[in-house]
Image (cartoon, rainbow, N blue to C red; front, side, top):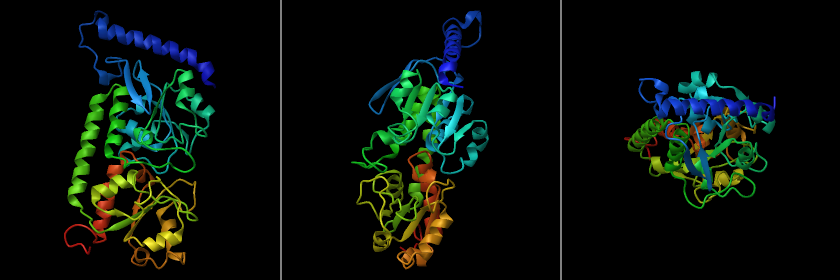
Length: 355
């Protein structure tokens, strides 16, 4: 089934639905009931326009057939209670959050990794979101411009808009990413889908949890290294992405904060030379690179002659975070909580710490 075959029927249905909504909102169609609210899948308050990566994204009515192409954007939509308006997800590094599992089970998974463009179009979306420029760009699944020609809205995480994505790798940042970019994504997606109250509630909850994590763990003097994946040439977090937000919040030192690359690949000799106090390891369930799971990473560190003599390896100072927690998303706050808890378990932060 191609999008060209299904588009006319969907557009006619959308026009009819929009007309019905207009009737309900403007005249109540003779009904004496209360006016519809924006959080009730109506077009009240629309069109909505947001500035996204230099583009004006205008939405005439709340999307009803959304596809999210990365786990970060998926979990935002699910957290906003939008599973009933999603027709596909893709590109997963980990299981969905437990609290979202039931909602997620009702949404088709187009692919564990990036879907083909044809698979995306077969889902017949009216709106597509993504967390990474590598998904929305040359060599990715598609581009916002290509979707626009089909009448499909597109939205890229603001965290990516603030990064130089030219060249190979995961890009680099001229300034440190702030948690506000993640909150902006939540807020704008809630506006686009006509559920702004839900967005405000989610942001407020994350702000509260972040403040609690900051207050409960002061790790001054503790150095950490974040390893995402790949055993041969590991991807290590630079200064200024999601791990940078976590490090600043918990007052720990990123051993590789002297590079602005998002996830530079470095050699093990350099890692061993920096000898951080703690190794934060991505515990991924995908099967894309070598040493994806936390267990595989620990095994590699212990058997590699270069890393096996590092203090953190000799003393089993490992912290496991999901891959999703290491990418800028709502999981960034979860990562703060989890890292703070595990550092405390290691006796490295909080009252009575050894540092």
